[in-house]
Image (cartoon, rainbow, N blue to C red; front, side, top):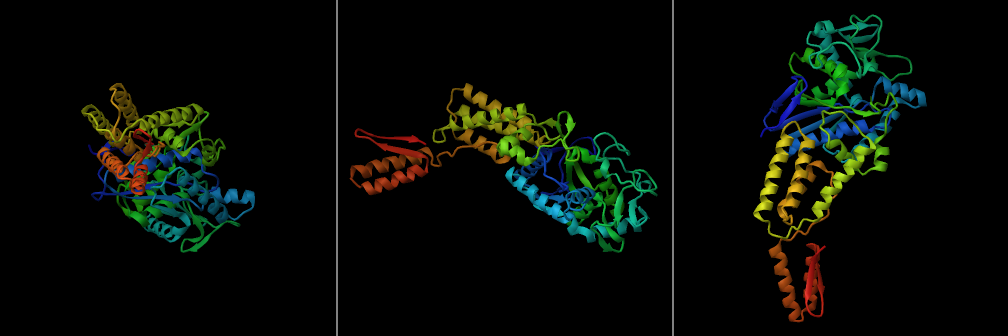
Length: 456
């Protein structure tokens, strides 16, 4: 079954077909580093980490890029409040964000691209928009003229701000031609960072940073563009307008993917509103596996609230899988029933994941397999072990104990050889074989009447 993705642009699931066979160019909007990353970021980036893992498991060569917004109004404002340079503040919280991602085992990003490293590309993009008649100047700042791009709004199906939009990023400026026109380049202000460029002294607007990065690394078009749902308008609409107007090519991205928002007390979790829990705080009370399970037990497009009940459910679900795994006997010969149960479950799990990365559906199938296996009265063997370990390789949510690596025939042969050595009073060689068996997860106990062994 081919992977299907819900494409926000098309408002429907579509079969995944990247621009180049076997290659996925994937960009996800990263954090603005002016404060600690919160569990809302953790949800989005854990879910996209899973998506990148699944693309790779499906055999694609994936290049996964995230930007780091390290020059922005919010950074400048916060740095001024605490009396540090904006670049110092950004560097501190970028390092903390990357440490948080490592702690969550979100390790599939191939490149984190900082905005300030792409100033030349930003300037070149603005110059091209000016040349094509899509930009105009007001007091040294350059704005995108929405009147020149009728397709603005095709992603969100609207052209005006509302609700949970990032309205603080809709630039206010006297002299703009249209209320929604957004800044491409902001004129220098006293005390703010600036670059001297053909556009004048100033700094980039928020939206242009991302398209300069994707153009530099992927060209004018790429396969997957993602982010949280609140970025759809105006940020993603602005990215589309900039890149498609500047390049003349459409679409900017073949597939647009948006994660549901994490809420606290019914409201969107946001650093700007202060209703956040940092990732570090969450990890001080929960293992990374519990947090990952809580996020992946929900569909990536669904909003969720990370309550104590949700975390308790995640712990209980993890324990159920881990306890089942401990009962697996990898040295026994699987019955036909056990093999069939495992094969059918594996097929259903990956069919669910092929269907728009349906992680809750896949986990429900896993628990159905555990229930059916327990009801069969068959001791789970290698087929069950392979299934659980395959799921864990993708989800990274279960603490699995090590299992004996030797098969039953190998262990029987070693035990028989060791017994022969003991009968020949070649005790040193017998002890060496006991050490080999221990490495295979088998403990040997020599008694006066017989030798016993057990799996550790």
